[in-house]
Length: 145
Ligand code: DQA
Image 1 (spheres, rainbow, N blue to C red):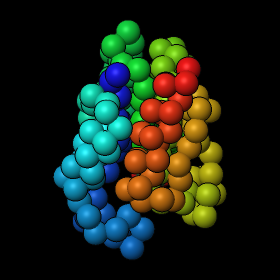
Image 2 (tube, protein in one colour):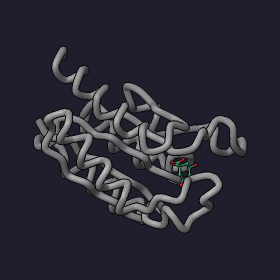
Image 3 (cartoon, protein in one colour):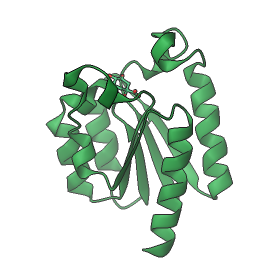
Image 4 (tube, rainbow, N blue to C red):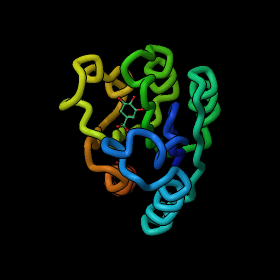
């Protein structure tokens, strides 16, 4: 089974970016962590990061018929993008939302998640560990589906 892990804008700046919120580990470390979680769960994986909304929509569309589950941290597009929500709904691939920080404890504009409306589960405020929980949740979900 194959997973697609999508990371949205500015997550490539991890380590430099607001370390008091996102920590000091960089994006390379996050990708290495995600790879190891996929291996642990026995998934093949594709990792994708983009700062562009349309590129994320294209990536979700191209998953159709090829990918069994999606883990997505749409970053700032979480709170603005109906296009990403619609793409997730269009392909109907089970998707799990992840946020490193606890968006519900931050500014009120971060309390709305459009992408989350198309996701079967969200892991929020758990740092890197949220990706592991999302991958293991999808493993369980896909095995029992
Ligand atoms: C984020 C939370 C978003 O509100 C923010 O815009 C991000 C990262 C997180 O992982 O905590 O870029 O998705």
